[in-house]
Amino acid sequence: MIICETERLRIRNWRDSDRDLFAAINSNPKVMEFFPHRRSRAKSDALFDRIARTIDKTGFGFFALALRENDAPIGFCGLAYTDLEPHLPDGTIEIGWRLALPHWGKGYVTEAALALLVYGFGERKLSEIVSFAVPANTRSTAVMQRLGMRPEPTRDFDHPRVPDTHIHLKRHVLYAITAEEWKRCHGAARLSGTQRSM
Image 1 (tube, rainbow, N blue to C red):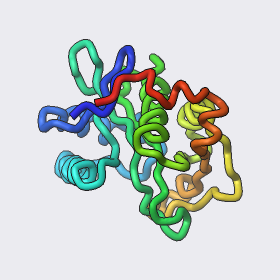
Image 2: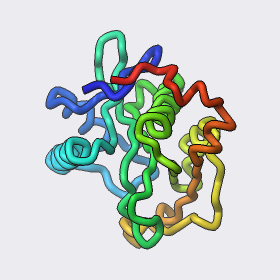
Image 3: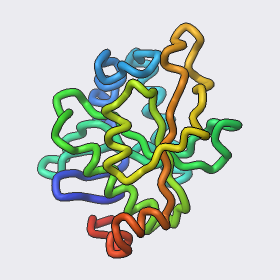
Image 4: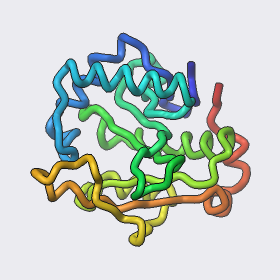
């Protein structure tokens, strides 16, 4: 199933043939610089299966991100339930991404995330979408800013699944955007879908 497409990208459900790319991302030290763990192939496959099941069950999750020209996977970008109570209320939806290193610096994440904001606020009728990252992860926070998201310092939190052995990765800054803010920033026309969704 294709969630949506942009000029260069396809956001779609995962396929078994995407497992190698998914594992490569989750074991790359540069890609995972701001995460406490690198995943083995077995743990990556288990996460792959869990994400796929969640998408099938809820329609939300971290979708595969592929090039439109050949459908080759290059990473993921998605809208997912946060599961971070009490830091974030149950039902909060985050936008998140992870990209294979050879595809960095081409604007793919911003392009995909903009399409997913249209999808989230337009088709899924979400009222708010958040994103969060370690403060030092300026590449991700720069994307959040390009998306029109605003920092909310009162909602920053220490991530409960980051162990104390990685104390420098516990603190996360949170950015947010509401449907009304999106409409004001990007215009109601964007919510009608400049990207094709299926």
